[in-house]
Image (cartoon, rainbow, N blue to C red):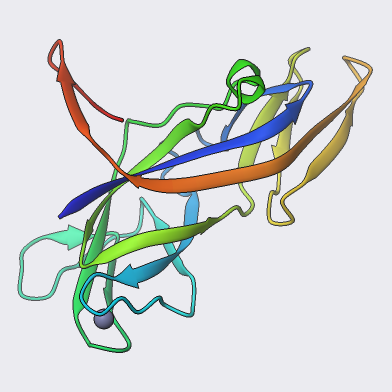
Length: 176
Ligand SMILES: [Zn+2]
């Protein structure tokens, strides 16, 4: 089992708090990425979709996971389980410092998640407080904020997976 932390950033124009529509632990937000087999190194051709509210039973086990999949090349089975409560919205301040915000932790067996794809289902607010639903499938988002009388936009979206390090501090677990 390896824990992977998915982090993301983007250039925000007069916007802040970019996050999944129901918050970082939105049970219906879909994460889309590819899988690399830890056994043979094969990268899945099709993208995989995982959603926290959707679980499947793990064969020969009592447990469940958000994804159970077999490698097409070597047949090795792998599972992915999402670990909520570690995400945070991308603020304007973070974006300006080109820092990445934590989005989700994935507990992976047999596969390494790679190449996250941004899709629909995001929400962001303007610096004057107007909320916008954003579809980042095309990577960019541009609108006009009537209240703040300024253009707003999201561009240069980036995401990366890295092996998460568990940190216990004051009885609280965080992943860095
Ligand atoms: Zn394989």
